[in-house]
Length: 267
Length: 307
Image (cartoon, rainbow over all chains, first blue to last red; front, side):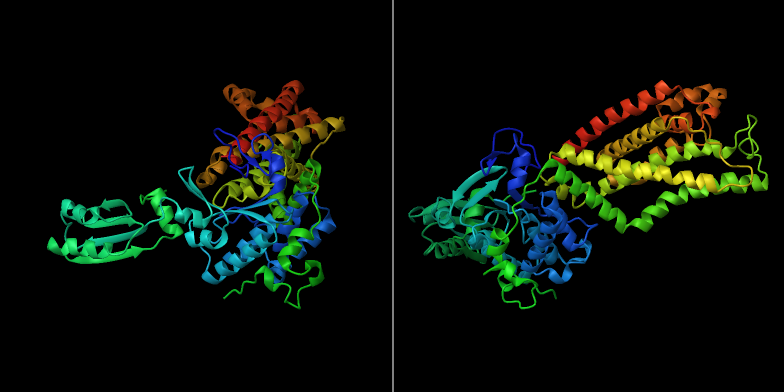
C-alpha cells in the first residue's frame, strides 16, 4: 500500500511526507521497492535492467550508463553485466533487484522478505550489504518472517498481524514489553495431569502471565522461569505420567511475536 | 557455488573498474555519488518506448519471421499456387467476373489481418506473461508515472508493431503472384489511408491491452480458437463485405467483428473498385472503438495493476 501498488480501502498514509493516494507518482519518485518475487525485466540484460530503470527516472543516456556501472560494481555483478536477467542465480537476482531499487537515490527503500529462499552465505552477505547501506543513512523498511533478521538488522520493529500493528518499538522495548515471557512447554505421554493439580502447583509462583493446555501438553508463559519446568514434571509424575518432551524458550523476538500473534496457521 | 560480494568488498577489489567513483566505501558512494534524477512524464515515456525498441531489436529475427510468414504463405498459395493449378476456388482463382484479381481482394484483407494479429501478439502475449507468475509488471508500475501512462505506452508500442506488420504485406502482395494476377491498387487519398492504418493499429493494440489484462494465462489457447481465428476468418479478409449479401444473416452478424471495419476501411482507400462498407460507418467504428476500447482497456489495466 505504501508503495502505491495497492489502493487502500480507507485511511491515509504518507511516505516521506507525501500522501500515497493523492500523489502516488510523487511517492514513486522517493521510494525504491524490492518485492519478494523476481520482477527483473527478463527480456533485458543485467546492465540494461539498471540502465532502463535509471532512464525511467529521468537520467540521460550517459548518466544512466554510469549509474548502472557504479551499481554493478558495488553489488558485485560487474562480470554478469551482459547476462540476460533470466540467467542469474537467486542471490544475484536479489542483488540486482536491490541495486535497481537504488538507481534514483530513494529516500526509503522497501524490502519485502529480501532473504527468503536464499542460501545462508548469500543471506549473511546481504545482511552486511543492508547494514552498510543503513550505516550510510539509507532508510530501509524491511518486512520479514525471520525474527532473527529483524533482531539483527532493525532499529525499530513493528509486529503486524492481519493488517494491524500489535506492537512497535526497538527490539529491547518489545522484549521488555508485556509479551516477553519465557515459554516453557511440557508434553506428557498419553494425557494431561489433572488441571486442578497443575494449577495448584503453579498458583503460588510469581511472574506467570498465562497457562495454555492442549490434549497432552501444557505451555506456561512466565517472567520467572526458575523451577517451573521442575514443577510441571513433578505434576506429571504425581499423576502417573511421564514427560515425553520439554522445552524452555527464552524471550526472543520470536517469542514476542508468537505471544502477540498466537500460533494458528496464517495463510 | 556462487560467491556473493557485499558492498564493503568493492573498495578492496583492485579489478573494479573506476573504483574512485565509489569513494571510501561502496555504500556511501552509491547513495551520495549519484546523479540526481529529474523524471518527467515525457522522459519516462520515451525511456519505456526505448526499452520496447531494445527488446524488439533483440528479437528481430523472430519478430520478422512472425510478421512475414503468414502473409507470404497466404499470398503464395492463393495468388500463385492456386491460379497455376487452375483451382476452381475463389471465383476461378484467377480473375473474377468483375475483372478483379484475388490479389486485389487479398491486399487490404491481409493488411487488416496483420494489423489485428500483430497488435494482439505485441500487446497481449507479453502482458499475460507480465501479469502471471512473478508479476514482472511491477517493474514498470513503479516508474514515476501514473499507471494509465504505462497502459498508453503499451498501446502505442503495440500499435507501432501492428502498423509495421501491415506495411510488410504490401511488398509481399505486389511481388508474389502468378502472371496476370497482380493486385489492382488505386490509392487516391493518402492521408485517409494513413489515418485508417493508424486508427486500426491503435484499435487492435487497445483490444490487445484489454484481452491481456482480462485473460487467464491458463486459457491462452482460447485466444486463438475463440478470438484470433474467428476474427480473421469472418473479418472480410478473403472476400469483400458486399459479397456476403447472398448470406444476409452472416453479412449482418460479422458487423460485430472490428476486423471487418479494418479490411473494409483499407479496401475503401486501396481498392475502392471492389466496393466497401460506407466510409462513415468504418470511421465511426475505428475512431469510436479505439476511444472506447482504449478507455476500458486502460481502466481494467490500472485496476489489475493496483489490485
